[in-house]
Image (cartoon, rainbow, N blue to C red; front, top):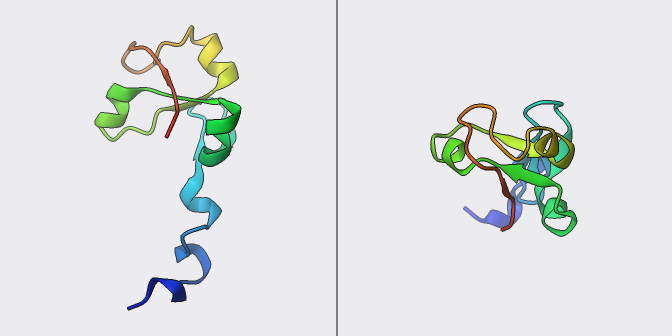
Length: 79
């Protein structure tokens, strides 16, 4: 099996693999652009529990950079 023959949604560069949504407003955020734009925050404890807790900058600010699920500090997303 060769990786170069994947097409459609299975292809490595497909947007579905690099897109997350804000947990509050459901804004679509591209992970690779978010590293440069610094507009994506996440909760490390919720992520370790397999809960997708990603937040846009506006709602992270409204939450005072605290996770609404576990009350821990939100971290900026850097790869």
